[in-house]
Length: 220
Image (cartoon, rainbow, N blue to C red; front, top):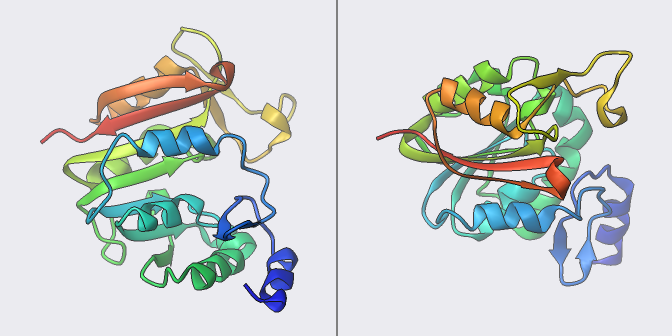
């Protein structure tokens, strides 16, 4: 990367830490948990698969999927695009990932003609707790997956074995984040996904139970 490109990188807004060149990483906030998500992605093959990344933000996982040989489409809301769209485009240019298709849609717009359907893999990392109706979001994902397709899920979780979700109110704000709606227990998250017609292949907690990972599958 040129000095001008490095300067431009530091002028942009970043949430993801993305290695754009050897030793040059975007100054994002979300780096410590990255290896957990990569381990989740290791559960399924990406080469030559059609992948949809929902809530891509700066594109960390979209570019990871692309580097693994996938045909990648990403969506994010217009509100998120205003914050992160420029940094996504910058990373895409530096990485040479022009084949990754970026569209401004919400999970609730799925399935739609522009984005398509019958994806082999859908990435839903760090999103479900930011939507007001996670059950509907998972139903939309099921409709957008191909039969036998996988959804990889990661997000905030409430410790405990019960089936319940904490609602983020104006008086009790989860992790000081007003964009969070629901924080479910792991079992509650699994039940949301089953309710949407997904099979649970694998699931496990990380970060002392405060994050949860799931590999789900649409029945054939």
